[in-house]
Length: 127
Length: 258
Image 1 (cartoon, rainbow over the protein chains, first blue to last red):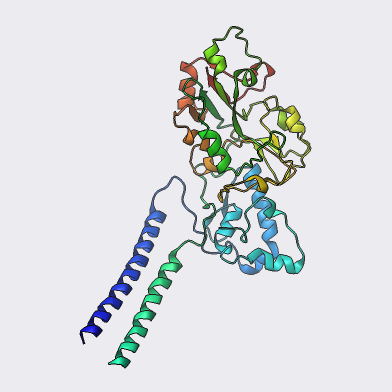
Image 2: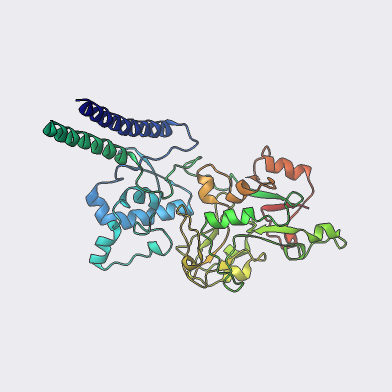
């Protein structure tokens, strides 16, 4: 009986620790998001445009972003739903590199060889 | 008893897994550069700002290479260990190399013996941008002479035009020469020219350039030359300063206190 009790207590403790850790992390994330930094950290958890549009037009979006941010200094893109987004390849990669083959699956199939990864760090090389 | 124990361990295990799972879901996926909205105007007004740097060479100590190391790490500048393939954004050099046309003929040996930090001067009248046939290098709205590596065709006219040797050519694939890579900045590719960008990627985030931040003696001061109230302008007014080859009329944005 005591064995059972000890085991129960240990299991509960472990679960509590895990839950506490997760919760604390969540809390600190919420804090950092709310912190009034001089420049807001951008929420890039949602795609900037519908999937079908991005499938067909991601190269145009990226080329337009590159031109206006590098040459005109206009770094903010306003999505149709009003969200403000940093015009950066990393806006995309901060989510999409969770799948290391994200860019390559399609490009290999279509035999397209973009030269992005000559300089930029590709999802395959990302740490 | 035994069966109870088994079912309990099962349940505890599932609970633990759920806990770990929820924790894992909250971690950011990877450590690429964070996307951050610019710290200032969404559409910059051309000519409103002019970034500049003041180097107090009296504070700069001889063997320190902190600024060079910080810059070259931050920007993934390769090091091949030989002069022919050398790529540099910021470096230290002797008085006669940094100020070959200085008018002071009888400078004290203490002054001529010091090493001097050199980097792109981000000229107000940059000769390099006029030489570039593709407009890959251009003077930005904030006075920074920037490189658009996407456009560079590697003709090296800009290198010939720059009177300060601030530009380097990638004779080899730079990724071979990077020992410790920063994931927060891209590399370049073989066949393009590169140079100091006044940390424009850090300025967007409201940070100072990496070299300024790294200097242990605070010998580097960075600021807006168009703002009369800025620290750099006050220091420029209260100190005698020098520029590199001022007689060429390039109007450098980098100043030196000797």
